[in-house]
Image (tube, rainbow, N blue to C red; front, top):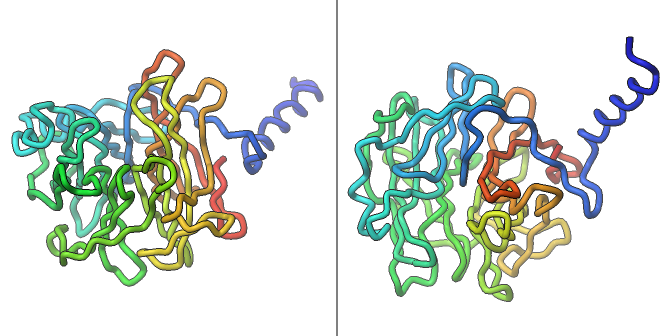
Length: 318
């Protein structure tokens, strides 16, 4: 039988697990098991109730889970390669920062082809009836940037607004986060307009990995500040702002415009969790779910999963 002290201790732990973030304190990731290596994850809940993750890897990596906790390797989206991407990757097979969703009875996969530090980049689209390895059909180029572009075509995210219109956010560094309108019938650009929604002009442009999630009357723009991809020395931080319009302006809790470096900090390096970033959000039956990667002390990238609730119109991680 549990002692009164044990019951009290467990109660305090439970309360701490659902308490709001206190100043200077950050919630650790929830328990995950199995194949927990990941980088730049994005997750969709399938019609059968299971989960499908896409992440940065050779030819885009896939993982599956039946319970959102135990994850299993599911191969590559393109097991036979993606030669159409190599002009942007300098021949590297590693494809970055996919965005996966299920719409119109099929899976959509937007993903990036680039090389580190270069703005010679492209975002491609593939579709699949099942989401399984080898089932993906290349739908071609969505948008590209070049050495003279003042923006970077990586880190795509598809968002559908309250009116059913499709948009894609993307970008890193340089002049910041961009947005284009998409045609829902093709998943490709519907016009030539290029919108700007976030930037850090006073901080060397250090932001990337945008993800917009609609909740109630607000669109929440999640993104990463600072530097990724350096193991336990990574300085990635997860930030958020909100807007009543999908195209912005987005502001943080203090009302600072995200075009001027605004952003409310939600996660940063703490304890043995290094560089938590590249956020994505999806809605599940119990809560909205925040997915991200972080580095262990040995520099290996791991899945981070937490839940979200909303207080006074702002997300709280628990």
